[in-house]
Length: 609
Image: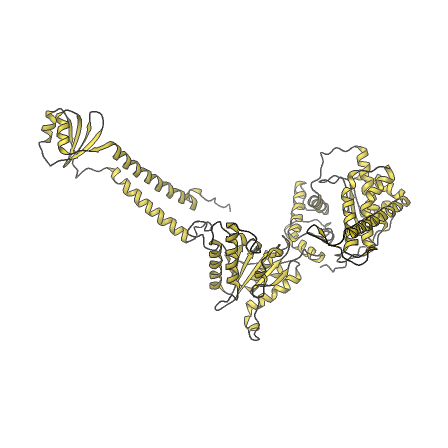
C-alpha cells in the first residue's frame, strides 16, 4: 500500500510559524492603531470647539451622545466631549458645519476588537510555546526552556533486536561484555560474595568495528532500557548547560534502572582537562566534572546502571575518567581477523544475491585491515557494480572490482598512455610478480597483476595472505623488500633506464629495512631498539649515521639479489610481460600455467563454517 505523504500545512513547524505570524501581525496592528490615533486625532476642550465653529474652521462632525468627532478644514481630525444637548445641530447648522448623529448603543466596529484579539493571541502563543518547550518541543528540545534537558534517546527493551548473535566476530570483546550482562541479570550472584561490578565499560577501537552495535547487543541480551547519546550532545556555547544535561541524563537513568547508558564518542566531552582557557573549554571541563561526579560510586535504588563509553581516541581521555570506580574496564574492539571477516561477510551477503562463483573465504583473505563497515561497503559497492551491468547476481569479478575501487580508486579510462609507457608498466608489474613466484616460501601468495590505471597507480600487483600473520621472519621481510624493488630492477634490466614510477616501492622497502634495524634487531647493530619521539632521536648522531648505513646496506643487498634472480629467469619475465600487455589483467592461476610453475598449495589455517 502506498504511504500517504505528510501534509506540510499541518506539521508542527507549520503550526508554530502560523502562531508566530498571527501574534506578530496582531502586535503590529495594535502599534499601528495606537501610533495612527495619537498622530492624527487631536483632543480639544469644548470652548475651543465652539470657537473653531464660530470661526468656520470645522468642516464636518459626528455627534454620538457625549462625544463629538470631527475634521478641521485642513483635514486634521479632532475629538471633544460635551453635555448631551439636542440643540447642537442648530448651532452647527448656523455656521454651515456638516453634521451627523450616531447611536452608540447600536454602533459596532470590528477594529475595537482587534487589539483585544491580538493580546489574547499573544498570550495563547506564549502559553503554547512554553508548553512545547517543557515537553521538548518534538524537535530535540533545542529551545531555551529545554536547553538543560538531556538529549539522550531512550530505547526500550522491546525495540532492541540486537543480541551477541547479531555481532559477527569480536569474540574477545563479547566475552568481556557477557560479564556486564550477567551482572545486570543476576546482581545477587555477585553481591553475595561482596563483589562490585564495574559501573563503567570503555569500548575502544577504530571507527566501523562495531562499538555501537556491541553496546546495543549488551542491552538486548540484558533486556533492559538503553539510553544512547553522543559526547558532543552535552556541549553547548552556554556555560553550565552540559553539566545540567549530565545531571538530567543520570536522573532519568536512575528512574529506569537497571539500564544501560551509552555515550558514543566520549572523547568529545572526556578530553584531558587543563589544556585551554577559552569559554568553550571551560564549559567542556564543567561537563566532564559533572560526569565524574555522577559516575563516582554511582548508586541507584532498586537496580543498577552500567555506563558504556565508546571512543577511538582513548589516549586523549582524562585520567580521572579511567580510574577504578568509573571507566575501569577497557574492552578492545579491534579490526576483524580472517575468521571474523568471513563471519561478517556471511552476515552482510544475506541481503544480496550472489553468484555461485563467489568465494567468501577468498574475499576475507584479500581484505586484511578492513573494518566491519568497510566490508559492508565492499558488498554494497559490488552490488552497485553488478546492477550497473544489469546482472542477475553479484559475481566474484564484481567483488574484485569493488575492492580495487576502494583500495586504489576508480578505474581511469581517460588517461592516454603510449605503447612504450604500457610496456614499461607491464615489465614493472611483472618484476614484482615474478619475484613473489620465485620466493614462494618467504612471501604471500600472488593473487593477480593488472596494468589498468587506478587512482595514482598505473598498475598493481596483488598478493593474498593465507592467514593472519602476527610475526614475520627476517627472510619474509627481505623477500618483501626484494618484491618491492622488483619493478625498478625489471625496468633497468630490460630498458636500461630509471623512471619515477617506483617511488612508492622505495618508500615501502626503506620503511621495512628501517624497522629491521631500529625495531626488530635484524642487523649488525644488534638487538637494540632505536626510537624517535616527537621529532627527537633517542640516540646519538653517530648512531644515526650507522643506522642509515645499515638501512642502505640491506636495501642495496636486496636490490642486487633481485637483479640476479630476474636475470636468471629473463625468459619468464618476458613471457609474463608480453601476456600482461595483451590481457591487461592476469590472475595467479593463469600466470602459473603460462610460466609452467607449480601452483602454490592453498592452506586454510582457520576452520570456516
